[in-house]
Image (cartoon, rainbow, N blue to C red; front, side, top):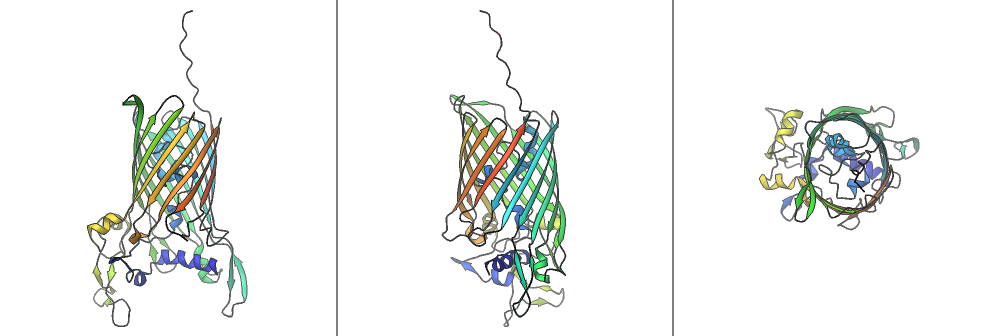
Length: 404
């Protein structure tokens, strides 16, 4: 039963149950979260950024940079690397839903790095039954995305990248008796940029400032049945400041802002029978506040900045804020923490994160844990565990010779 509830919840996200969303209110404000298909693309896939409140636009480059800001790969100092992360998802509801993430990169030239990743989201085993409740089959729905990325340094301190993504979702088969439904698929691109300053003086210490932007999942709508649905197109902006306390200790602070580039559900007009009114002239739903969300992708991106039915105040509520702290000792041990904030009217995801990291030669091990603010949150007890390997690290320069 819990598994069926999770699948049903996923489809509520996909197919936008507008009549229910528009009827809910919190302290006089309409609860109106932005909904998309394939929401698994928005889940932070790795432990490092996951331990820092899901920041990632301006953190140091690593194996998993493609998801957060692919242009960071151009600043990789190693020749190539590969990594793997496992995340049990909604563990409090269902024990066998997992997100797996495999990523890698290779430095093909001094200023050019290529990378790729595979994201696999398994919804576990579903028992399909007929109208009388008799079991007919087992089905294991899943979704996956395959990425390819090219990152190029355009100057000593700035890089940009383009990533291409193929997305496939098979969860619609559950609603077609496991045999008649077809998997849905689409494509998307990411465009990002990353800036990393030279070392500069910050009081009596040295510091490095970073900044980044990433337009992710810019792509065509995905179609499950008769309706086409937006995928989670997103704009991420972030900055960071890493302070070099001494030769062994560094401390970094990072801040990200995220906004979905997807139309907001408007407030519709309802008749006495509780159904949304249809304009006979246009054959479209009658909108009281907001704008029509059934628009082409390009129009939807621009419209997303000014279509909230609650005006500017609601538009500002559609921005999620992530903050993260990272401490490194001797480039061998890291302690991390962070906070993710989403307004209650837009989904109410609010949680603290913490984690640690260990580096042994070319081996990296990272772990993170999520602590939601609200009790009985389905994200409670969410942990991530990442393993990665970096090869061909740049050798430290030998000190200049001195005369005896």
